[in-house]
Amino acid sequence: MEEPEPDTLSVNGIRNGILSGFQWIIDKISDWYFLPSCLLDEDSSSPISPIPDVVDENDKLYMVDEFSISLHSVSELWSSVADPLCVEENEWITTHLTALFDNVTTLYAIVGSECSSENCPEMSAPNSEVYLWLELEIKVRSSINLTARRQKALNISAPSYINYSLAFIEKTLDDQKKLTRRSLEFPSNCKELQSKMSLLLFHIVAHMYHNHFGMIAALQLHPHLNCLFIHLNILVETFSLLDEKDTTVLQDLWQKFKSTHTTELEET
Image 1 (cartoon, rainbow, N blue to C red):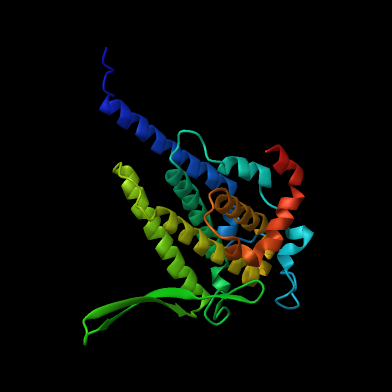
Image 2 (image 1 turned 45 degrees about the vertical axis):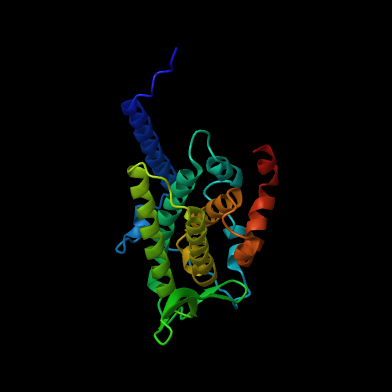
């Protein structure tokens, strides 16, 4: 007896159900980072804590126990990032990158007022790290009719670097969503794009820790930033999106979070 062919409408219905589920997951992840509306209202009269003093760039305020707290424990976030059954890996990673992008954008918008070309002339990060923007440089040598392609490293201001990064991530995620809606496969360089988006998000988070943690702590938003940081680290570790050298500047903080929740992780 021949097996009946799958019902196309049923298959499409299942796929639409999965996509609706992804949107629910994105909304759920966004709830992790719920920001009180008073912090988004410039006219709010809510009290703001005094900005803690930092003696020099080697004083890592974010390493102080008082500020090393998160909205959720490492184990809670780890279990939610774990690859679920019956979900294509690229779609799952894209779901988390979308949530991370949305919440990094929201948090940066709050501290962006002090991230200017004057205050942040370089895309600086802990341990005296400076990130350079890689721009594709195309040169045509007309004499022999050859085109040379290479990446040119530019030392640009932090706000420019972050704006370029967010624009790239937004366009890349939008392109991938279009492919998903049209039931097309992800591009062959999907993993490469996911790694690049993860790296740019990490650079933005590292800059906020290094240059703007005083303001973040004053607004009592450090649990939100820590939650973002933990979520991003778990994602890149679970799916091997970044090399260890890419995250070296915040390894001390990551190890602190992991050691704090060692027992929880062993039970995960």
